[in-house]
Image (tube, one colour):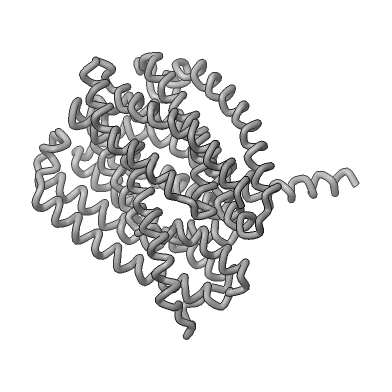
Amino acid sequence: KSYSQKMNMIRRFTTNHLFMSAFYKGISGLSMFVSIPLLINYFGKTNYGVWVLVFALFQWVLLMDFGLASVLKTKIPELQHTKKTDLINAYIKSTYKISTYIALVIFVLFALFFLVFNVQSLLNIAFESSFVTKLFLLNIFFFCINFVFNTHKALFVGFHKGKFSEQSIAVNQFLFLAFLCVPMFLFPSIDDKSKLILVSIINGFVTLLVNFFYTLYLFKIEKISFNTKKEVSKEYLNAVYRMGFKFMAIQIGTLFLFSSDNYILAYFFGPKDIVPYEIVTKYFQLPLMIIVAGISPLWSSFAKHYLENDKAWLKTSIKKFNLFYIMVLLAMVIFILIATPLMKVWISKDFSVGSFLLIIVAIVTSLRIYTSFYIYFFSGIGKLKNYMILLFVSVFLKIPLSYLFIKLDFGISSVVLASGLCLVVWSIIQPIEAKKIISNF
């Protein structure tokens, strides 16, 4: 009986998509933690800064999908709720077809951009311009292919199997870490250019293989097939695209607000000076990744319960999160206290960072976790107007605020302060808006 109870408890945890999503994101975060000092040691600080600038484009490319991936998370639960499951295959087929067209356009546009503009000069990169162009194009090539195969992550969430989305990311991070050890041992002394090219190829191939495997797995367990004669009506697709454009605008705005920091700092300070900022943000990214991954399956759950007019469930979810958030704040205090000694072990004994940057990044991370919950709520129920207004006002203010704080000698903390001010406003307005929506339907 005791053994049976233990097995039931284990089964409850392993079948809980919120818990397992957070668990897999933790594995991803730990793999990332280990890979960072390895990359710094292999590249050197300056070239690691170059790698950060290159890899940041991966995030930009993945979000240029006209919001199709985000719409999947909302529309698949809707099709299941309205008993239109026969449309799911046709809808998914259309999504992959459009994603392929978008990937081709993105690659061409980026190729033209890098051929026309001198990115090497713009980002203060020490290598010659021709090599920088080749390096960026190589990564964009891989990213565009993975852009299409990456659709499986949104589909897993849409089918209420969010843990597999995070599992695929964890496998990807772990395999990249494992394969990263190969050039470090076999080719430790090759020139800096070759190192950047080699790591780019490893990252691209590993991501492609993992995405391809999980796409096949998803198609098998959900019996998805492109061999369908069912067509999605133009009216339905137009409604999807309208929602998709909203999601794309939100994604690009969010990415600019939180992921443009490296480029702003590179412009004002240079690639080498962004390394301390990158280390601190990656350090606090671990709790951010775990918690946001844990709540991400709520997107489709919010859609489902909103369609069912289940006020009680929505109110209870918000109350539970607010109680959970107290633990988040306590965890952030602990992360601040152990940061300095941990970074000396994690990065190097001579690595140091100011307390002000640590505290500011911790506050912003806490605010991002809090606002992410409400972002998933608004996205799940399709109420995006007020959130979009908040976001684009913040985007409009991001660079002027960053520039102001740089002029006030806040250094690399400037971009974090700019984002933090915006998030304070979000954290006040979003809960009020959510409460109003639940009360009025």
